[in-house]
Length: 405
Image 1 (cartoon, rainbow, N blue to C red):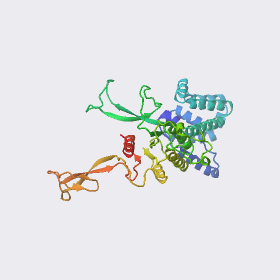
Image 2 (image 1 turned 90 degrees about the vertical axis):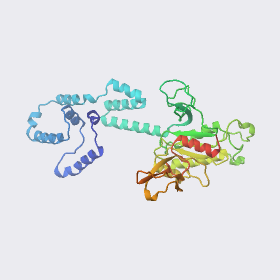
Image 3 (image 1 turned 90 degrees about the horizontal axis):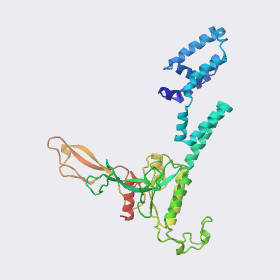
Image 4 (image 1 turned 60 degrees about the horizontal axis):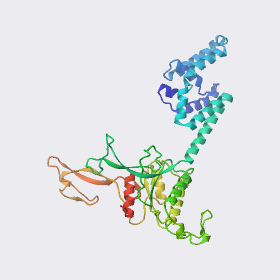
C-alpha cells in the first residue's frame, strides 16, 4: 500500500529473505524476533522518510531509548501512542468514493472487501486476513472453472472519419474482417449481426487458460451448441442398441424423420487460442476425446484449426496430442513475408532464380557492390498447417481445404 502511495516498487522475496535470515541468526546473539511493522512504516511515511537509511536511524534511536530513556517513556499513555498510530494510518482508510468504485469494478471483490473488514473488526486482524484470502482463492477457482467460451462470427468493417456509407469496392476503402462473438457479448452494437463463416464450420474462442478445472466446461458448451446447429451424418452412429450410451436422450429407434435435413453436417472447427496461456495433460486428453466424439458424430475426420497459439508449451502439447499437423497432403494457406537479403556482387547473376523459395532475384545495383534478393519466408512452420497466425488465415485455409467459396 505504501509502495503504491509513494510511487515505488518493492521486492517481497528480498524482504522475506532478510527477515528469515535475521530470525535464524538473531537468537545466537540474544536478539528479538524480527517482523514487518505496519504501524512503524506508517509513522515513517508521515514523517517524510524516503530511503531505507531510516532503518539505521531507527535502530540507533531504539538502542538509545532502551538504555537511556525508559524512565521518560514510562509516563507516555497508551492513548497518546494509539493517537500517533491512528493519525499515521488514516490515509490508508478507503474513502466512500473508493468503496463505490470497488462495487462498479467488481461486485464480488466488493463483498470480499466487507468480509475482511467485518471479520477484522469483530474477530481479529489475522482472521480477517485469512477470511479475505480464502474468499479470494474461492473466487479465483470459480472464475477458472466456469470460464466462458464464445462462438465467433465474421463482420466486414472499414475505417472512416465520418458515419457515411462507403462502397467496399472503392480502391481506397480499407475493409477488413473482424471476428466478434455471435451473441455480441463484448459490447458490439446490438444492431450488427455477425455471420457464421460457412455452414458446418464453427469458430470457438477460449477466453481463459485451457486447464483441468475448466476443460470439460469449455468442451461441453462447444459440443452442445454444435449438435444444436448441425445434424448427425448417420442416423444411428452406434450400430446396435447395445452400443447406445445410457445418456442418449433417444428415441431408441431413430429414423430420418428424427433428423432435420435443413441443418448442415459438421465440417471443420477453428479454436481461437489467443487467450490461452497454458494447457495441461488432462485438458488435452479431453480435447482428444471430443475430437473422437465429433468424428463419430460427423462420420468423417473433422479438421481442427488453431489460431493464436502463443505458448511454445501449448504448441508442443497440441502437437504431441495429434493436433496441428496431418499425415498426407493438406490444402492449406500460409502467411508469408518478403525478406531482403544482401549478397555480394560476384555471387549474384541478374535474372537468376532461387529454387528453395521460388522467387526471382533482382538485377544488381549499378552504383553499389551488392544486390538484394527477396526471400519469401512463412511466419509459422509449414510442418504445422493447422496452426494459423490469425483468424483470416484460418478461415481461408478451411475454405481451401473444403472447397468452399
